[in-house]
Every structure is written in structure tokens, then in C-alpha cells.
Image 1 (cartoon, rainbow, N blue to C red):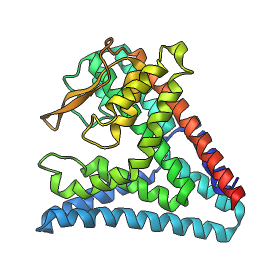
Image 2: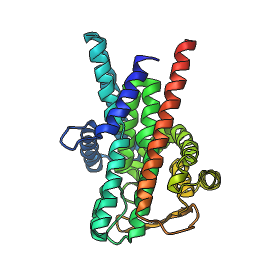
Image 3: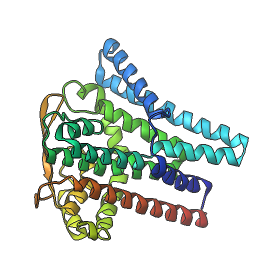
Image 4: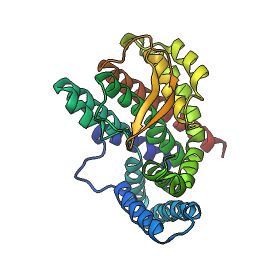
Length: 320
């Protein structure tokens, strides 16, 4: 197995162990500050925002890829130990399984203290307006976020690191950050964010189609928690296209089927109602315990994805 794959494995378990400590500077925050600054400059001085949208995306993605490639090259000049350590850190920064599970657990704990606390906590991880959500809606929002981010927060970063190292991983992370900040369809962001949204769709196309089936498969061994693998497969096959995004419903449908709940529906974003297609069947109301179940499904899916990526990478190295 190559040194890059060993670095990925170490980074994955480091992420599970410590997540993303709030006190530690993180490259995504720097990328986010640049995007906010560049968006403001483009809105103030660009007459054709749809063309500016391309410049915004490329000006974030390309420097991130080049910076990561340069860092890897410089570390390689210092020797194999600094190179391995740098790769582990750059991969760890790009993964979010640990922090995703932790944020979801905090929502569950906040709900135990009261609905208002749960609404405030879930607002940290979702883009929708949360001030009027019911308890069931808070749970569903958390489940949707964990399911969706199994793709773009875990499986995609692992896959791109394995394929192209830190450079490809951080090109993806920049595109993902762009999408989360400007990739909306409302009037405010439609022109400035269209290219970022399409770029993120392209990056997540393959990872989503890997993560969805893996998540349905992982529901089978989790039957002691009440998850149903057969139902996850059935809903995945039926509802994987039921989303405005071409990618999000792959894992959301597998999760909804495994849990026996229905996701999607009407949500409010920036004060406006957005109606999303239904995903899954409303066999029962969503309950706070579903957050724990979703975390277990996400973590097992992530582990299986890592194992497959390492196996495929190891076989490729032997063939080469």
C-alpha cells in the first residue's frame, strides 16, 4: 500500500479521535473568508455576475490545489517523515466524520434540554431557517445533514485524496465551501453561485453514487439498532433522484429507507419556502434516537468506504 494511502488511513482515525477542534485554525475558514471577500468585490464591481461566478470559483479552487501541491512538494524535500506527517494533516483537515458525528450528538443533547436549544444547535449545521422547527423537523434536519455529508464530508475527500493527493482533495474542499456559501438557487445567489453549484455537483457525482449503495449495504449489520437494509435498498432505487441536487438523494434515500422515515418536504431558506420532493416513506415519526442511528450508519459507511479505497489502491499499486 502506498504512503499516500497509509496517510489517508491515519488521517481518518485521527479525525474520528479528535474531529476539528474549535481552537485550531482550519483552512476551510480561510477559504470561507476569501470567498466572502471575493463575492463582495464581484457584486460591487462586476457587471456580468454569471461570468463573475466562474472567476469566483476558479480563483478559490485553483490556488487551493496549487498550495496543497506546493506544500506536499516542499515537505517531500525535507524527507519521508515530514512528508507523511504533512499528508496526514492535510487529509485530516479535509475529513469531517468525527466533527459531523459530534455536531449531531450535540443536537440530540440540546433537544434533551428543550426544543429551543435543539433549534439553536441544529442551526449550526443546516442552511434552512430553524426558528419554527418542531422536534421531529429538528431530527429530520440533522439526519439529512449527516446523510448528505457522508458523501461530501467523508467519502468524497477520501476518494479524491487517494486519487490525487492533497491537491485534488483541497480543490474539492474549495468547491464544496463555495457551494455551501453561494451555491443557492434563490434570487440573491443564482447568478453569483451557479458555477460553484455545478462544480460541486460534478465533484460529488461519483462519490454520491458510491456512498449511497454503501450506506444501504451498511444498514444490514445495524439491524440491532432497528435499521432495515432491504428497505434502504428499495428506497435508494426508488428515490435517489428525488432532490434538486443530482447527488444529495443518494445517501438521503438510503438513510430514510434504513430508518423508516420520510425526508424532504417544505423548508424555509432565508425567509422563503422551498418545497423538496419527498424521500422515503413516513412509516413512523422521526425521533431523537434516530440521530444516534444515523451517526452509526454514517460511521460504518465511512469505514467501509475507507476499506474499499485502501483495497483498490493496494491492488492498483501491486499491478503497477
